[in-house]
Length: 201
Length: 347
Image (cartoon, rainbow over all chains, first blue to last red; front, side, top):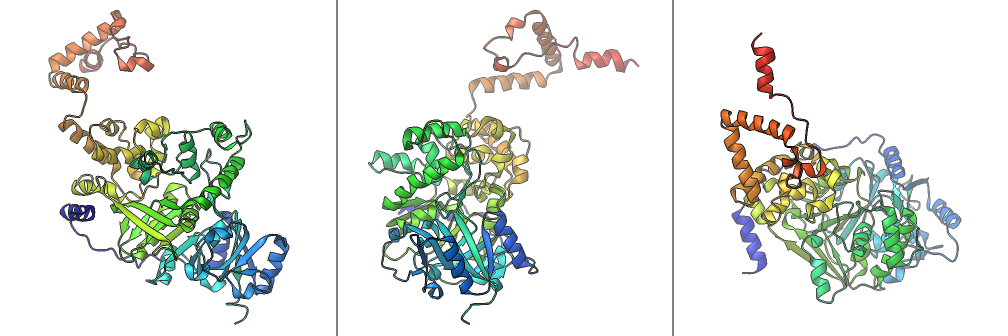
């Protein structure tokens, strides 16, 4: 008998009485003012939100905040005129260790906690939002939901390899409970909230 | 933390595999060769000056620098080197989803993602109770976790792993370690609902005074005291008794574990199985006889008051554990019964 069979047999032998799966469909947030709430929440947890109307405003911001010697990467084709495009999945993830700024798209934002949902189809390399010193996310203003319940309703049963909610810069309070931003992941998180669905649409 | 619980680090080290903890607090207690004292804040028992000294010794920081910002920055550089050079990453699991086969790891620092996305092999280890039925139920649990742990709206990173990345190996270790026994104990199975938020520790008057190490178990605090006796009743027989049963833990528990009720029930199980000390058994026996016989009770009270007054050395000595850190009370002139007889009953 393998250890797996032993554990499964023990679980089966010690089963409590079955209870019906609860219906959680009543858990819903308020859809009014989700954009404002998202901005307020993300700002409160150490993130930064910039409202933009097109990609030109994003490139202007990147130009103003980074120097030529710093490595800036993106997975968005719209930004390739000025930023290194990452579309080769065969390189080692370790090669991104010198990245100053990663710019990626997000599927959706959650207003109650300031998190954005990103799956590996937007990442090319899973490590991109973590290994960079600074992280910038482009989020369509229309794609903000009130709570985690709507977020999972939106995600549904989609088949992905990896997906993550990112809420603000990496942080720790392990030393005497003093909050320090920039633990192992990015030191900052900037969300470009795009007013129109996309500049080239 | 789940690895710490089963001494996996020690085992791997004995077999020539160097293990480096990557959570800042875990790394600090690892450098100090101490166990963690809290499940969310592993080095909460350490002053920043002690951590500065540890970093001075092990990571070459200037002596006397105890600035949390500076020390965290040092650890970031030190551990980044580790993430970039190690071949295997061991992580825990916060939730696993039966419906989709994915597991979710929550961190604020980003260490699980840095480890998992850079290493050739990702090994995730979880107890059987981490499994929840459907993906949408993550909405309930991810909201509960940090609200009850640190007061954040959500952890910085809530990463869902369903498949390894291209060319990577991913292994999931599902651990029983007494959980199926606990599942079979009707009075105690509720403890398996624990999501390891630490709310019971943060509210517990005993934990807050005594600290995590006094529980001599990887998971300390009220929840540790009801989980540990299931693993080794004799070794952890003291824990369910180290409680005032005030119920604050049950009150704050986000998954509604009846912690103080279980502490009370463990006491009965432990006594019935004979895991109490002989001194305690004998004194309880004496107590039983005294309290069930009014004549012995009254005589005992009189003797006690007389001894306190005329022969204090008989109780003010090292054989009396109460006296070790406290003075004995002033003996009253008479018992409540005698006082009542004199002042009220006759009127």
